[in-house]
Image (cartoon, rainbow, N blue to C red; front, side):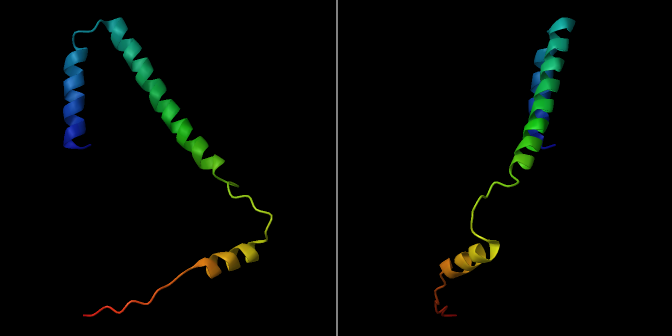
Length: 79
């Protein structure tokens, strides 16, 4: 945890002191939901990335095209 994150948590915890128990429980539920939502979203993004590149070309032809499209330039580094 960074110093900034620790400061933010301390600041918010001071604000929460004045809330009722019911409000604190509601806040906890919403925080838990946001954590679960974030984790599922990352997993979904990861698994949806498979098969993201669709092409009718065979792999060898794609590799050949990539290699042919590379451009190199020679530059004299005067050291």
